[in-house]
Length: 386
Image (cartoon, rainbow, N blue to C red; front, side, top):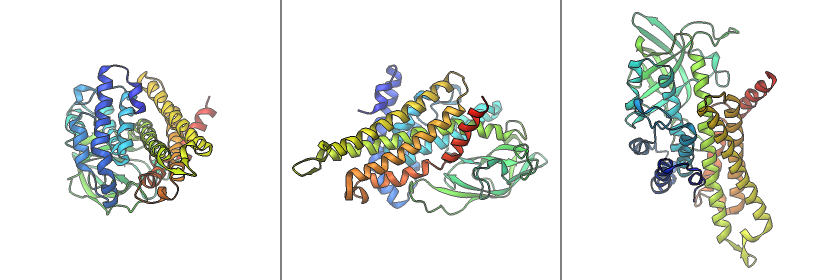
């Protein structure tokens, strides 16, 4: 029985978790190995998740969302990630991409959300650049006002869904100097349809894991974006980006927990079947201790992200807690997946068993949406400011 099932608070929520579990077990998990092997993007799975009503859970029903608290949404993401990390993380990326319009968009822009949240469209989040990753405020992509449009030039890097997305949530400089001390000023947010002339994705990156999830550079070459696609106030986009990342880090924490849960279950199952020296290896104290530490890490990660989600749902500040959850959950996932390989021994190192893939996938969770070193900076600065 999945851990998220035990956290269901009412019949509606339990039914939602049951639906996510059914999709994870019957659709995602069986399809993941071949798609990962072939680096095949699972667009049909995002359509399935969208039609099931799981792609816009934390957004209001008037926008076409599910009107669910973040605590519920994240448990659904965990369930999806336990079946196929690329899909769980893709749902988190899409939710991140919709955040600016949902929270700072005009009434007209928010009218685009039903198509964005229903599975017909898939989003990508364009913040990082080849020369500005952790220092995102140093971005150099420019959007120059020209009549009733903005003309965008620049390159975005590490874009999940690059070349597959239907729209890009783009952060570009409309004023200011990327080398100045106040370089966060002058950054604006734009909603850019993927079909805009001058927008093109580069070839996918060749990654260690999550090969079915396309990551690519996206180039903007004199791309003309209508002025009414500016989201929020001009020059105030960086605060939108940071607020989105706080929420997105919780999505990564949920994905990490789901991946770790899958690795734990695989290790427990194997330990209960594999026999050496006349008994199951799960009866050896050394293996039991290893599994106990893995299970404790998964539960602790889940508790951290749920605690941060409850703060968000209550309208409290939660940025530090989101950083803690992302930091701990992704480190825990890396450790749990590595230990799962150890439990399986030689079989854990070959592709016949999924833990080999889980271990490769876990590493990226310590890097995306702010490396874990950046999370420590966020936490430390918050403590110093008290």
